[in-house]
Amino acid sequence: MREFSDLVPDASHFIGGKFIAGAGEAVPDIYPATGEAFTEVRWATDGEIEQAVDAARSGFETWRKTPPAQRARILNRAAQILRQMNDEIGRLETLDTGKAVQETLAVDVVSAADAIEYFAAHAATIAGEHVGFSGMEGDWGYTVREPLGICLGIGAWNYPVQIAAWKSAPALACGNAMIFKPAETTPLSALRLAEAYQRAGLPDGVFQVLQGDGATGAKLVSHPAIAKVSLTGETTTGMKIMRSAAERLKKVTLEMGGKSPLIVFDDADIDSAVGGAMLANFYSTGQVCSNGTRVFVHERVFDSFTEKLVRRTSAMVIGDPMDMGTQMGPLVSAEHHKKVKAYLDAAPGQGECLYSGDAPRVQGFEGGYWVSPAIYRPHDDNQPIAREEVFGPLLTLFTFGDEDEVTARANDTEYGLAAGVYTRDLARGHRMMSRLQAGTCWINTYNVTPVEMPFGGHKLSGIGMENGKWALDAYSQIKSVHVAMNTPEYPY
Image 1 (cartoon, rainbow, N blue to C red):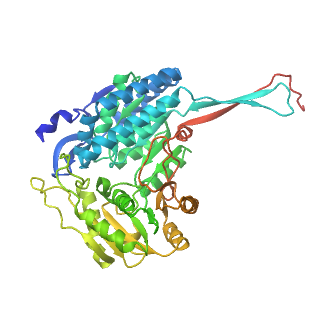
Image 2: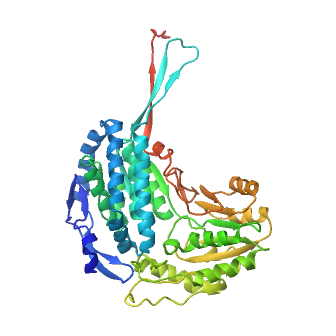
């Protein structure tokens, strides 16, 4: 691992404009491809949490008074600095996540920079409205969009730097300060994002990074100084945050899990639909919350679709994540590997196996958290592999006969994050969009998440939306001001 030592930050936290080693419990950071530690970080102590909160208070007072155009310039510089750091941070993401470097170099940092750039454009245009009153001649009102204060971002481990930017960019554009806690298994890239913000001229305390586990997150969520919490993570974690935030009526955005449907009609471009299904199940080793893991294929094209899907899946390249030819790396951690492996081991009893390669044996990476992609046709829609979020490369495949049937089956889930439809009949495509119970949907594509569009789920998949101009509502509050131009007549 010495060849990657120059990528690794030599600090655990970023507090008040300073990178610090930290004084808390030391925890190894594991490279998923080998199962070996390549560095360590320290969880934040109670004292370090208070230091970060104090610095955020000070940073917020400076940042909220900074002219919006100046905020926009700083965010734009940060986006450009991040682009310059793309290769370094992309490889760091691969070290932390195990994802193939062909993905991290092309998607993770690029999408983070896109988000910061997009919200920089909005920072200078955030404004209220003038309101006239009927029957109250001369009187008028106006609204002011104000920042919330100190926001807390809690990240997930599948897209660490992207998620850190998706949360911090709109928060900072609105004039807030943010404390960001990365996921325990992927702590490092948020520190590089902090470096980019600092180099761009962001005032001290406005963006900070604290490492820690669930207990650290709970302390931050319940801290009275925190005005808003944004989580990307598991549904159970989101429910805990919701309960804690309710005690002080804190604003909450929750982007959580899913068991999303991908529907292929008989008039679809089958080759494109197969590619979409593979992207929706095997990209990032299947560790994507919006994945379309329930693939419904019309009975008339099921055999053709399945033959192409199995053939193309069997040709996927699994291996060294740092090799640009690798298409799928290991799972993120030993704990997650155990969970996914349990689903894969149980799958033969729940359905027909259409494809399941042998457990990969990658020379030089024998200790890694490897699994093969798998395709199963469950006995029915109620099997655990058909209903529970696996968060690994396990695709479940079903047939259907008509639109009403597949709509009912697709919506028969407690989740509602995403849904996709492949069809050449765009009238049917749009009709399905109105019928499917999901917050993020696609027609003839899948898992495309441009920053200009909102991303989020319904039902147990979350509350609120990230990205797009709608995210500004999540990080600001409206103040209503009534201006009396005439002497009021009082009833007393």
